[in-house]
Length: 362
Image (cartoon, rainbow, N blue to C red; front, top):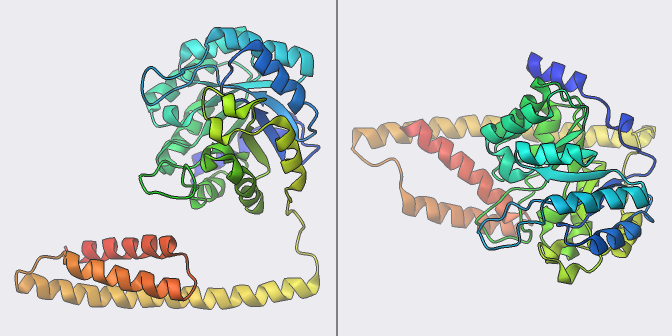
């Protein structure tokens, strides 16, 4: 780990020092958008009954793709957040996108701020927010950018750290994609895993609502997050989800959420059984042998690629042979399917190999 990131990771205040951890998973929950005082209070009353829920969240300003959509109620919603906190005792959280949002949240006593995915992509916007919270002792959560660029995610965290914010956490909410898939946003779990490798002390939270885009997938995505070691979840909950003014399909009622959280399994048992430890060790050794062979095979493959590249140059043949590539990929995917492999994974793998092969021939 680079020295600046190592120091950043070490300086982060442990999340259990500013947020209770007596139930796992711990959850930040509430409606996608604040719509009325009645809606907020009714949802809060339902959520406070669930011991897993530690923070009440609601969107006050909604960054929508196109105008003339519901863009939030604005400052009035902050007063409703304060009412929920006063009645339930739950700390409150909302998204901020500029200096004005931060100042209004601080004025109304919001406990936790988060930077949304559309804001994380803009270093200018993140820097503006960072300057607005400078000198303020408030936790700030940073959602991943909408595109899978780890540097933007890390950069946003660094900007907040640079102005003195030490109560930091990251929220994984998936990445936008043009490809039709089961979920609304591609989880690309390797990205938050790499973030955790770079910043091991940074608390990581998963937002299964935005990954799934559909309430029927919120539970399985939550379980996936727990299975890779994420212990915090941000889940959208509405007293009447089907009547919600934004993201109705992905919200669940407080009652549904409480039942779902009780079904989730947190796998945190250490490997202590000697027999199990030995079996895992043997399996890992076999995987390491296969990994070494994969690297050796890739190196040999690239040697043949370079030979082909030299022949193409000598005979003035274009590097990219699109028809052959498409036929080759089709064959690979058919074989992968026959062997029970995930074809999307195999496709992504061979696209990377093909891109490197083209590069080697240029």
